[in-house]
Length: 203
Image (tube, rainbow, N blue to C red; front, top):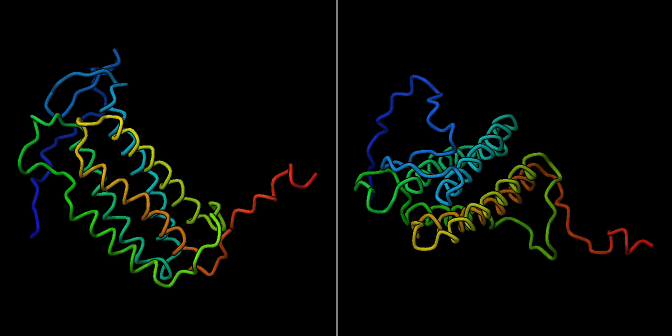
């Protein structure tokens, strides 16, 4: 069963308001909180992740056909991250029934995509290092920022929506699969972790 949310009701006519000059900002319910409040840190980090996803999406667009499917997925993920930010920026008592948020459907969709895209990948015999191609590296940046957003939400405890925590946990796994899938589709070998490539092992 699909779930429809309210469309945004915004009128952004001026970017600066001067209201945050003293180090405070507003939640969706209008409450003023410090800009280093953990709730602000949570949706701020989710916003940071969204920006990195945008970079990866542009790389996918430039690369074209081999990774076009992933480009479409990343657009959807950007919308989902905005939905996550909406709920993170709202106190539980202020959440509207039709407010944009994360549901179980998002994590389940990621699982289906991971299972399908992981099928053709070679088995791993070591950890992989980010890199080999730009898209692989960008997706690993997304993965690590996603993990940070997840950790912040976990620190929030009961203040965080459990579906957001679940989604971020699943999404970070998806970024890992997508990084491998992108390299595979582009025909670029992965860089495996070799402990004895360290300087100490070469002395």
